[in-house]
Image (cartoon, rainbow, N blue to C red):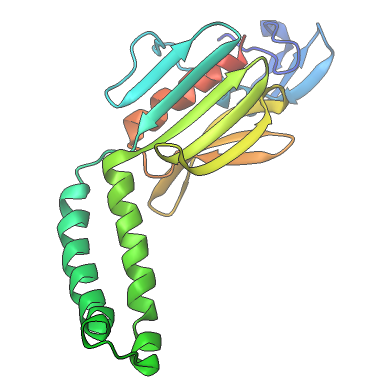
Length: 209
């Protein structure tokens, strides 16, 4: 079992690993940490970053690299027609009728707000399931997470060097990836388990370097 210290990236000697006490001591930097936490940050032995799974992409230029996954999903076959019926029917009936008649009805407009917000959420889900993507890019230690469509979406900048481990977690039926260090950053919501697995292990491999 090969265990790498998260602080100095050196291999921890076997005699300094205590499975019973869940500890690992690095003699190089004198860092004592949790063995289970280190193992969570170690990529699978069978993982090969040179073979991305379908729907993921990698660009690696040494100090500058990007890994990402597409949110394209078969769920679009459900979301698109449902949204067309929901948004088309409710919004045209509530707001379209007012535009056609040229008369504004404040009570009907307020009543239609939940349908408007619901339509916006459904349209966003449709677009994400067709064109959405999650990207993690690092250049000379400066990192960026992007979740969105094209260049429109959520951006979060951070220092990659402050990340200690990468874990795969779940909340109810939803799974996600966590980058843990000085702060926790969650990403990968909506990606398939295969895509999450590849991205998480790729990030773990990068932490080893």
